[in-house]
Amino acid sequence: MLQQLLIHQPEDPIPFMIKYFQEDNDNVPKIIILGPPASGKTTIAMWLSKHLKSVFLSLENLMTKEYSSLAERARKHYQKMKSLPPLLLVKLIQERLGEDDCLRRGWILDGIPETREQVLMIQALGITPRHVIVLSAPDTVLIERNLGKRVDPHNGEIYHTTFDWPPEFEIQNRLIVPEGISEKETAQRLMAYHRSIVRVLPSYPKTLKVISADQPCVDVFYQALTYVQTSHRSNAPFTPRVLLLGPMGSGKRLQAALLAQKYGLVNVSCGQLLKEAVADKSKFGEVIQPFFEKDMAVPDSIIMNLLSSRLTQHDCIQKGWVMYGFPRDLDQAHMLDTLEYKPNRVFFLNVPLDSILERLTLRRIDPVTGERYHLMYKPPPTMEIQARLLENPKDTEERVKLKMDLFYRNSAELEAFYKQAITINGDQDPYTVFEYIETGIINPLPQKVL
Image (tube, rainbow, N blue to C red; front, side, top):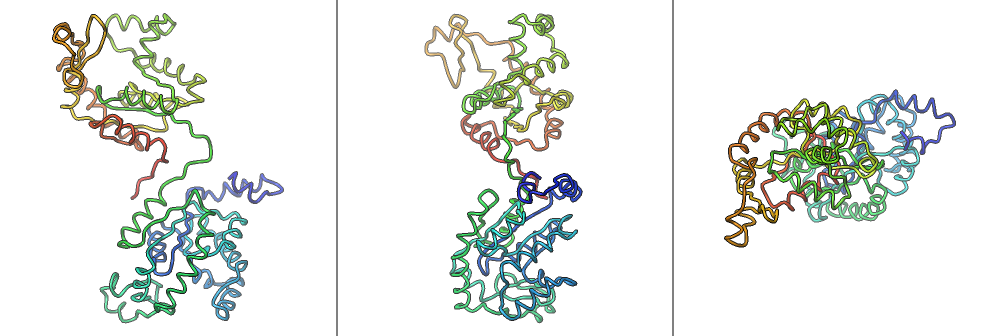
């Protein structure tokens, strides 16, 4: 809405905003598909239109609009000159995009704009696509492909004598050879396209995606569909609020430390917060202390008060945070969701039980130095040290299996609750895991392709 206010600069912004909200078209498709001749852009645009139930717009159907004096002028001019003046074309687009079906269902523009001048005129009217797709393929491939092109005059569907021949004899018999598909004509059109497209692309730096058209049409379509169903990141500042979920021993602590170190996030460990509260003898610590002494679980309400107090501090608000150790079940997830600062990135670290047992049951500590060892990954340097190592009672196989059973009972509900969570294989090199998490934080979250 702010973008539209800046573009249109209405004298009275209140009626303008009321009309904007009434149209309620913030989430409808607004797509431009560009590409050289024979790249298949019209086919992809029509398929996307059918799948997304949006309005397919090409130069041809813009001019065939009934009861429009503008469309009639465009038809007469095109019959004489085989092209339209930029101003007439842009007015035609503006008129069509302002109609009810385009406002409600969104639109897909096929092959428009073609020039830098058209781009600037379209942008000046406040017509801003959310996604721009450019199809690309070698000229030799496009020339060969164009020679086999055929068109169904009944519906405008495009077929090919080699790659996409219709099985129905009725359709085969009515297909026609379109004009301008000879090798020489195609080469000339490709030269004109390459001259103009290099001045068009810089106008869409944040919404542009180039897709290779030198592959099966279905593959091109699904790549295009995946892209148009992603949301671009807002221009608003993005403060990561990262939640790491996974069984004990899955590496949450290490990943949280790596994220905090690289991105300056506040490392929020639920267990550590409880221990610090007790050590500081704070008011929370006095309430928590009896539960620690009796080795009992701290009530969720107390944990929530402690977390709320920490997550609303200035450093968490300003820098963002990475949290682990909470929630452990669906009730806790619902409680966390009520906080003003709920997570905007959630990751599940999946590690099989055998690997968890290997990681945890072989851990040892030196009671003399406090040094931690692992009998497989970090063995003690001498037999003397090995002889005095102790095992934490929490790391016994029985205790680990008990906690893993509890985790598995709750994990399915947590995964269902956090629908946009990203699941990562945690049973690999920790820095590889970190790279996957980092990618999930940096990139916008994709929507699911139906």
